[in-house]
Image 1 (cartoon, helix red, strand yellow):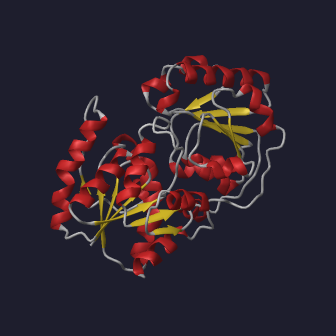
Image 2 (tube, rainbow, N blue to C red):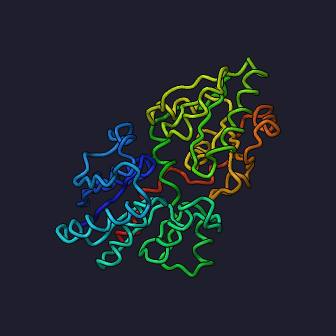
Image 3 (cartoon, one colour):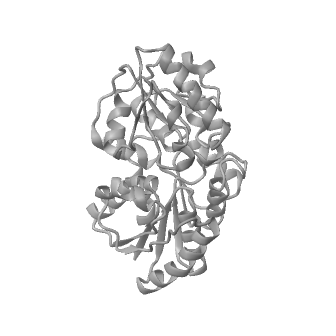
Length: 336
């Protein structure tokens, strides 16, 4: 039995094309939702069948170690009862690492979607960089989304590497949204390493840009995290809205002029819609976008890099994250 384990909104999104492909090929599988993003799951639950198992691991003020312990306590029984032969995980969250470790100790094969992303800095992003490096050492299938990720794994002497593309391209293409370049600017900011003064500075600079450029409509679907919400009062000329459903977000992304974000996944989504992105981080595990001129690392310095995105927004290069067939390629490696 193949078990797919996921716990966060991005994992549900990126694993959904694989679930659809498994169903089309009539390959038996079951799913486990840990609940790491319990409050955001409803947004994307329509993308997948109802999970067969829900671990409900989260509690108030939960620590990373609490999450690790909870998954380690609940998942082994499921793997044994289902006689699991392969556990598939996606990405770099604690759900991914804890689940992969449990499978490894239970002598169940591990398949890692989006393997090989690296910043080579264990503190940035934390704990994601450590999480993904750990999983690479124990995975039986390392499905690399890009050539650069493939080469990272080769340099680490990792075995069983397969170049597949990124499943995010599969799902972006499935909606069929057409790319246009309007007067909207999409903003998403939520990363832990930006909390505090860096995030405050970014938001202040975005407000300055909104005042200076009334011809643009700055739209900020604000993350519910209190560390983000505490700066909401600084935005008087920006349209602050509740988080969008995934389909709504992609439709907006297809229409905007460019993007300001510290997200990882949206860097890949921007490539699917040809949108430039100011990446509000010091490092990125997705350097492909930077190398082809689609993304620019700006840290908290948005003002001085604004013209890079605004003056020549249109981009029509080749998507470095794949052609929309990642799920098929992943399952082909298992089949063979």
